[in-house]
Every structure is written in C-alpha cells, then in structure tokens.
Length: 405
Image (cartoon, rainbow, N blue to C red; front, side, top):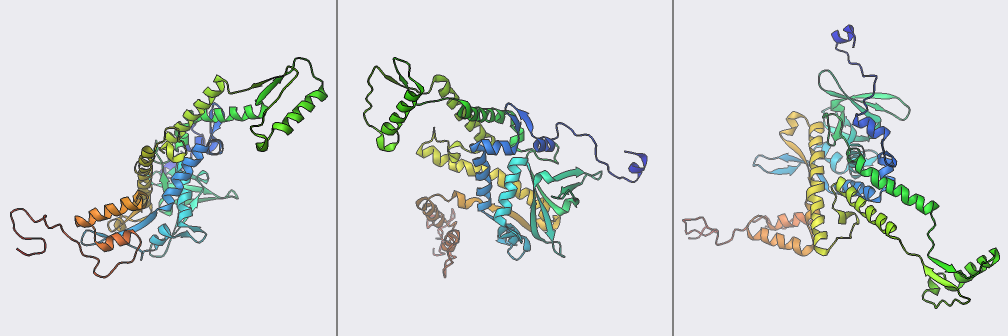
C-alpha cells in the first residue's frame, strides 16, 4: 500500500492467493486420494453425504422460525405485525418461500461453510425481503475499520459491493472469524477415502468381470457351440419364471457358483465404515440416514432424539445468532428475538404427547388452551384456568389452593 493510500485510508486487495484460504480451497477443490474433494464430488458420489446435507437443510427449514417480542410481564408474544416475521416464516422474497430460502442457506452452510442473503429494507429500516446468494459468488473483505464488506459477482461478471448491514452472513466454524469452513473442507482427508472407494467400485463395474457361475466342459467348444450353450441356459433357466428349476448337465459338464472372495467382502465392509465416518462428519446419527446395520427399535428412537438435540439444535442456534446480528439493530434486539420451534420434532407419538400434557395439567404448568394451541386447535371458553394440586399448599399453612381453610 502506497503513502497516498495510507493517508486516505484506502484499502487495496492482495494480489496473491493464500493456499490455506478456506474459501479458495472450497472453490477450487482440495486434492485427495481420488482427485478433488469438493462439494460437487462428495454429494454426487457419496449417497450418505447427500442425505446428511438434505436431512439437515430440509428438517431445519420445515420447523417454524418466529420473531418474538418480549412482554412487560417477562413473557413473549409473536411479533407478526413486524415485516420481518413474514420474511422468516412465510415468504422470503417475491420469488422464493421462506422454506426454500432457509433450505438453500442451510445447504450452502453445509457445503461451502458460508450462507449469504442480500437484505432489502423499507424506509423505516425494517427487513422486507431476503435474497439468498450462491456462496461461491461472494467474497468477504475486512476493511481498515474492522467492518466487513462483500463483493458479489453476478452471472455476467459484474461486481456489486454490499456493506455489512446489507447482507446476512451465516458462517460455519471459522479460523479467522470472517470466512466459515464447511464440514467437507475440514474433513477432506477423511472424505478422500470413500471417494476413492466409490471410484474403485465404479471401475470394477465398468471394467471388471464378475460372472455368476462357471460351466466346465471336458473338451474344447467352438465359437458357435459357446453361443448355443449360453443361449440355451439363458432361455431354460434365466429370469424369475425359471427360478428353482432343476438344472441337468450331461457329457461331463460341471457347474461352479462364483461367490464373493474375502477381498470383495473386506472392500464392502470398508465402504460401510466409510459411510459411518461421513455421518459423523455431519453429526448425523447413522440410523437416520439409512445405516441400519446396528439399528434396533430402542436405539433408532434414541438416535432420532439425538438428531434434534445434538445436530439440529446447534445448527438452529448458529442460524438464529447470525439472524439476530444481521437483521435486528442493537435497539431492536432488546425487544425482539428470533427462535426456531423445534418442539414439533420432539413431540413423539400421540400417546406419549398426551401423557406429557396430562402431567403438565396436573402440576399447573399447562391450561387446556395451552394444550390446544400446541395441537393447533382453537381455544375454548374458560380454558385458560391453571389448576394446582390440593396437596401443594404452602408449608406452615392450613389453606387449600382454592382459598378455603
């Protein structure tokens, strides 16, 4: 930076690329055992990774995301009179629903480590729309003042500069607090192995020879005889309609079944272990992505709860914190806050749910209308009464909860 630039506090970008920059590594791909370990290669070759990303984005987008207002009595109420409520809960912009926008952003967060959306505000400074941006088109820069600005490249190659308050940025784990690093980037060494295995399996299927059985003749056969035998066996014993029919071979012909070798079995087992590693990378329980080798009735239910508590819970907290920072001013954060409603995913079956409601009613935690609201039913008259058990009188008194002595 020259003297004039320093005096005018003008910023210049570095002309050299840092090989350890997580954004550049994610964009250009990191080399591994099977080539570039990038989101496209991982999601197109590893079904477990594709399911993990889809599960996390779809589940978090499916639950309610609400803007709440703190009330004077310490409670809260939904701030559905604020334009931001509709943006988060119903419609993100004129061409995208809130579900689609949130799914897009969580997917970007998992594959690239960063999720961006351009913010549109009204004359009062309230958020009226969010326009998600492809993460590979956005480049964050830190100014001399410490604030961030973002260069957004459009499809035509044009560049638009957005200031910190004009963009919502949700970042994953970061080394510098500016650019997030995706699970794919952090675990590229681990993902290189299943990618190499998928490539090897594809080459075996393309170039390898794995017949189901072998016919041995005592004498040499002509080319015409080869084709005649193959055609006859296929017509008489091929297909589901001929399954189980007795096979009769004469003339000293022997039939041998070709089965998987020990090496083949070991390769399949290693692929199963690699699938479990991929699930661990995204913090997703194996049974929730179809790995049922060790699944039982009890642990499947427990892992479904673990998916919400250990996977979606931290993810929801990360998104909420970024939205609070980017979409609400310092003054607004004293009154409003944003929160996902994960209770719907924890509701369980009907019997367990209503058993919990019964206990809540008995201890005075729920009123009938509280239960009905949780079940999306309209309130009833005189349904806001809270009951207290008769044996819960204060110690040292003879008064009953109803006031009679």
